[in-house]
Length: 143
Length: 435
Image 1 (cartoon, rainbow over the protein chains, first blue to last red):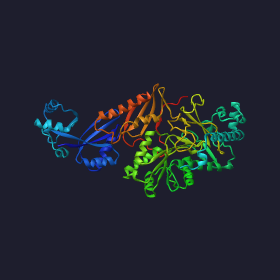
Image 2: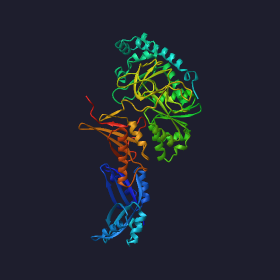
Image 3: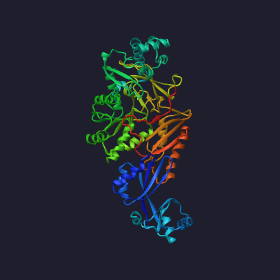
Image 4: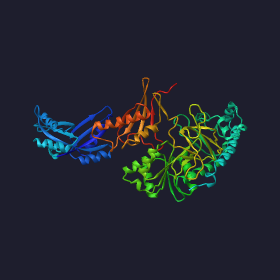
């Protein structure tokens, strides 16, 4: 259920982002979803790719600071209020969201929300106990 | 082990009487042969014959680095050029380099002092010395080379640079002793790790490291990463080159200054007055055996204190404490004195932070700003912004607590701060020069 997300430290310098995506592209790695968190000096690029092990390896070879974090993906119906149901469940169960980002599936029926929690296992229990389906890792990396 | 028992363990009184005799000869010689000294002694109203005790040294005027620049290239030489067998020069980062000439006897003495230093550092006949100090105008390479040969060790004259090849040779030739700058030793460890070489498993046992100030923390890091004893060596080209002083491997506590060749004093860098033994100030050195370019009370700008208590190793020569900075490296940021070494010790006390840092000083309007750039690494990197910001806040707070100066901390990508193959460049001062 857990998805491996690649996180990369990036200084705020022009062209740096393109260097990361360039390395991935040259190695035939496809980006499925991404989010960029930034401060005035640096950013953290978070990526879900089709081959996280390979991505980790090639980025490290190019001297990037990279780590793997476990996140989960949840499908939410692409309609108003869809996200609120999930957030309420998390709130009622005192599960803390570190960050989240969303994208819409190709078919267009569902939005996929990627969540990073303090405690992933606790979050998975809370969500599944309340009938929310967590997407298999395979499903997300092959979107 | 002691290389030269007769001289290295001379009783204090014998050292001092030898120093006085040699000081008097030196003063006579420079007064007669170097116009700069004749003028400066005359201005101070002192004649060579007035030097009757070691205490009289305090009446003699100082020699500054600027005096050497002003007499570029040969103005301070005390013997005719045909008696000079070697010429070195210090890296002139600003303007002309300072030039030093050695007579045949100077080279012989330098070799002797480097041999003493190698043995004090635990090096013997049979060691393989990997000499990565630069060969050339810089005194490091050749100075270490001659001393190592005198001890009877096998010297590999690597010089600086070409790090991967250095590692190959180190592995294949079985180097047991490494001589280079402390920052380069860490760089070697870093490149070794990248190349998949376990540098800890090589035959290296001792590093004789110098030519830039380094902290006790950095020593611990070098000793752990390379699995060696890291010995601090002191020298400056104006006085001799490497081998003015060295730590003994027995104590690793202060650097013995070879007092039968040099007289060390500690002064208040503001007033020039000599401080009592044990107090911290600027190191001033008088050479008492040099022929080529004898220097009277040369201001080294290095900050330290003198330790005259006996050492466990049996050597009687006074020690200087490890340098805590240079008075000209000292940055004044909004009126606060800041030594790069202090920032370094703050970084060392934070888990996972590596000592790759750079200080950028700017002037914003009338205010000085200090930016401390620190590399993020795998250990300190987190996927969460708040953790990284926590790290930079912690660094900022620790610097503020220790130094009383507010700075901006910028986390940068690993290996983006330039690695030096010689002396590390820690400070970039972009403030306009005072006119």
